[in-house]
Amino acid sequence: MVSPGQKVVLITGCSSGIGLRMAVMLAKDEQKRYHVIATMRDLKRKDKLVEAAGDAYGKTLSLAVLDVCSDESVKQCINGIKDRHVDVLINNAGIGLVGPVESIPIEEMKKVFETNVFGVIRMIKEVMPDMKKRRGGHIIVVSSVMGLQGVVFNDVYAASKFAMEGFCESLAVQLLKFNVTLSMIEPGPGAHRV
Ligand SMILES: NC(=O)c1ccc[n+]([C@@H]2O[C@H](COP(=O)([O-])OP(=O)(O)OC[C@H]3O[C@@H](n4cnc5c(N)ncnc54)[C@H](OP(=O)(O)O)[C@@H]3O)[C@@H](O)[C@H]2O)c1
Image (cartoon, rainbow, N blue to C red):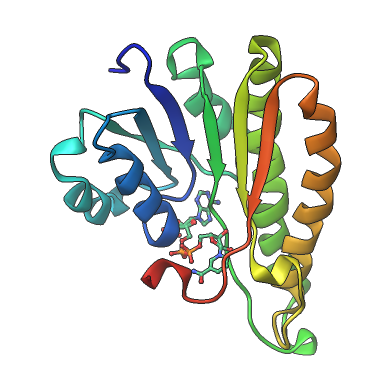
């Protein structure tokens, strides 16, 4: 249950890594400022998150299924939220791909773009119109330092993050007049281990 004054924060890709850590950190906020909807594509992978959340689970943290690559899953998740009200959308779900371009099938490359680019855009398309109507909201996109600089053998991953940099830079300006903020985070390698 969301308490009055709490911000609803929806995070994608919370089964591990940065998403899991962000969900736990926000749900354990001492002032209880956030109600975190921690989403993942397969709830069978929830145990690590539930354990790390401890007492916050069921109070300031709830779980929901969400596959960023599926229109139906995204719609179902957002429609399941009271009044579809999301104050902060954190687009964290992402996949990597390392290797020489000539050895990677195009289908593998497409999966990276489906998740890192169209997955994020699908989320924004679903949540942004409500934020615009309410004249308020914050969209966060977890990019990478490889969204700013290419790295050998990370060609396709870097390209997917560069794509999001261009997308967000353009969209952020349009959202200003609706009082919706769009931020990007560009973590370096090994970010979730700190
Ligand atoms: N860790 C770093 O050093 C670093 C550095 C720069 C940027 N980043 C970025 O940070 C974000 C999180 O990465 P991470 O390092 O924490 O990696 P991670 O531990 O592999 O976490 C990625 C998360 O995304 C989820 N995911 C993948 N495809 C999905 C889909 N179709 N729908 C919903 N969720 C999906 C994974 O779920 P499953 O468990 O179901 O696979 C997992 O929960 C990514 O966008 C990544 O590019 C990370």
